[in-house]
Length: 232
Image (tube, rainbow, N blue to C red; front, side):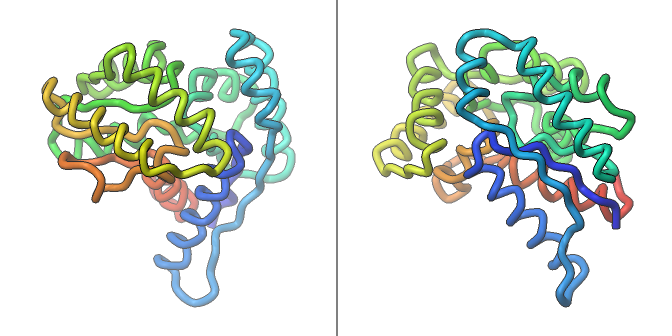
């Protein structure tokens, strides 16, 4: 089995989910006492969050490149970036190392395509919902039309992520508000919704939505196991 290289810490709560999901899936597929060989480099989310909101993406790209080089030196066979938002800087990783990056958008889009859906809603940080790196990759590479919530709803989604979920706080009132926003997307024509932030899966599951949900963290983690076992 190949060694999975993970860049985590954005936030540590979601990285813990990655570790759990990857190893549960490895054991499910192989049985016994199996788990997935992996290396984890964890960055300090306080610094990442500060640089994100200051617009210092160049510095963040350097941080990710350094983490990827650590993984490569440690013997990782490929990189899993345990966050949606920081895939804005995917190129910083691919240019820094010779091992491949398993891109979360590609994995999520492939699941949407398998289901035969063409128009999906997207929930994530403001960076993910408003900047082109996620939406354009979905459209240009996979032909999937992406809807995002209205301005006020985007702010709610973003604030819940940074002020609650990144601190491990799960609030019923926030779940209800997210459910309302999913319904807004459904009324606008979304056939399904992508949970495009790793922390959102701590709050929203399929049972909380009347339309299909694509949990990007779980999809990414399971795809990492596919890659490690020789698939993808």
